[in-house]
Length: 74
Image 1: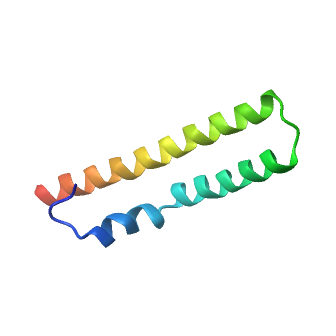
Image 2: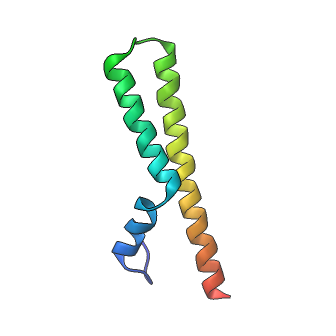
Image 3: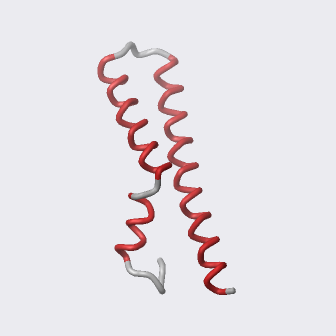
């Protein structure tokens, strides 16, 4: 948990990040494909790729936050 920043600022960095926004849109697309499309191996790959996208998006936000903190300390 962050000790020097407000909780709103922590949430804002995730919500306003373009990679997170893209992952949310991709998740919506995956949900629509699951509801309307055929259930085959491509659907499984779609969800796996969405999970990887979310993991990379969160990782990039965390890395950017670590870099910003490093610059503040220097």
